[in-house]
Length: 188
Image (cartoon, rainbow, N blue to C red):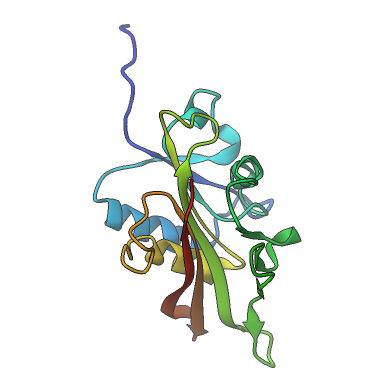
């Protein structure tokens, strides 16, 4: 058998949200949205199954640190670079510059009405000279799906190559609508 050739397709990395190893609806919607935007094939892999070599490739991370362990590791390594992040347990998105915290809002029945997410594109901290990482993650699944939708909004994201953005979406009848980029900043 000959040497394996390097597969240049980016790795789309999912976490697993529960013991049944089920990927959440918002994560799946985000994956479909990003696949359509990229217009090329990706390799799907679970965060826990990544090899040390794969972690240094171009990565698309789906889901926040609660559901995707690699998202948590990457956010920790980008800590001095980013001003947006998740509060403990992903319950809200906070802005270190302004002190603003964006938390999902719910109706009287406990159903979400507004959700928030982050979309980040940066140098991959495991291989900053050769690879990039994209993170789409929300406080809930609707925020994750909205963050993926916002990834393609270059004008709203300021045209930066590397950026971080806070995304807000309205939730109605178990679907996200009216995605808005509330804040976008270039990062080094």
